[in-house]
Length: 155
Length: 174
Picture 1 (tube, each protein chain N blue to C red):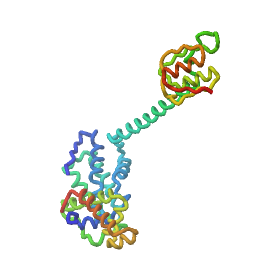
Picture 2: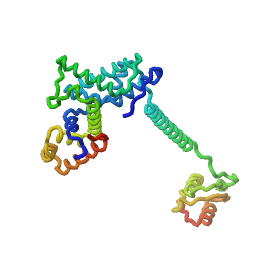
Picture 3: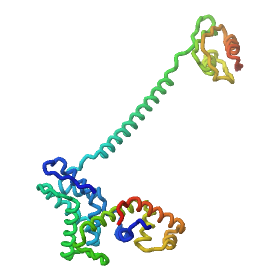
Picture 4: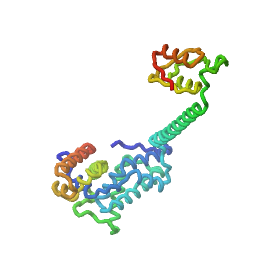
């Protein structure tokens, strides 16, 4: 308390009001009455620029996100080109399978649809790349089970 | 305080200068006026009028060795005029502040008071309230504590914090 000048502190404390002696407010009033245009201070410019960047950034994010959504929707709604094709029309059981780093779960799903059976495996996350030519479902299953060392169940 | 350079040829900077002067001295001039008039609103009006008159003189080509000194003289004279008019303003009884007080002393004191005002303004409202209850209303720490429903320790801590801020923002010592 030694450092604070007591008399001056008392004087100020007695008269202090939170909204009084607002310099910027008074300056604006002064500039109005004196006919002075308020200077565009660098602070003002920084504030405006940051606002623009914030808004611009938000807009850009929104746009990017909605683009992504649209892209995702597109890829989902359009059926992915079947990654297997029928090699020979002989028996409808023959297939040539071509996959590139595809999770085996997806492969089994497609095979299930083609053969009308329910195929499943515990290791559905394992991936397969390459070609498999087979004349029947049983053959496909054997090949997959042997190659990947997994167990496929058929229902 | 540095002297502001005023040049009549350089009209381009004129408005910036007066605004800079305003920002720099407004508060301390108001506190100077408060030694004469009791009401803060009236003090602000007086200072505003002085700045407007000063600006007029600037524009009509007057140059000033020290804008600050000139503004202080204007404010003091304006206050005395106001009092002579017998208006609403009343001199605070405890201050025998008369125009013959050396200008330098008045300026130094008002500058200090402005710093204290700014410091009090910067306090969080709870802290400020406690300081004012103590200094303005004369309450003891115990009384403040019971009135606000907080512990005496808290009051003491808040007072210490307030004084730290005041000490820091006060650059001029008497």
